[in-house]
Image 1 (tube, rainbow, N blue to C red):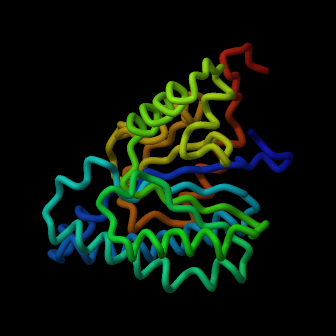
Image 2: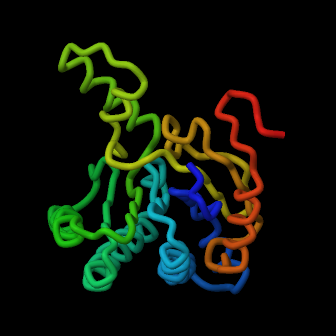
Length: 232
């Protein structure tokens, strides 16, 4: 969807490059992830300040449990700290905060923080921030299929979308991957069928407001056809 201003309704990011950002500076990977959180704050403010209603971030995939235990522990700690520190800001600014994913490896305390974050922010009307943590697109689809089977339902495409973890969200208009890789890494596989894809060489901690605006300007020039005949 494109607004009257040419802006997307929903932008999603595959945030890649934290570890390489740290390595280039001879720093521990955990400091790269910490700097990545700073970028989340900065870019989220930019997105919502421009009037874009939905922002989705791929923070931790179902495959990321294979990473070293100390790195995984650090990422879990960063998520906990983020929730504790940022909820008051989101409430004040009217931003709904959702964390989606399987939550299979999360502690009871972290699960409670996630529930609390949504409960305290769910009445926000200025924007929606969704963080995908322990999320995988294939797992999301399989879980949705199993729900349909359990209910004995035969569904169409629109109804099936309601069984996904993103049921309350529109499909992303833009998916941006930073860090120079050109793949989607099991992210929102069903939802991004017609998303515009942008691949940036910039490592996530270095991603800037200027580059965001360049991507938004490119999107505004795009003739989105959704399988039909374009305007040009």
